[in-house]
Length: 60
Image (tube, one colour):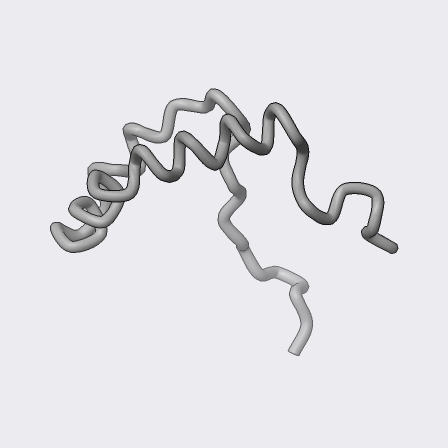
């Protein structure tokens, strides 16, 4: 199976407004985002300050 013609969703850029996509979530997904919002923000701040664990290790 090839990726030709396949449409893959793109990850939002840092600081991008993801609010429009939140409307399309199910109640369970929305609840998960709300419950994990502090952890997701903390991770984003950590990565901004320290980079990702594999920085400099990737071969691609």
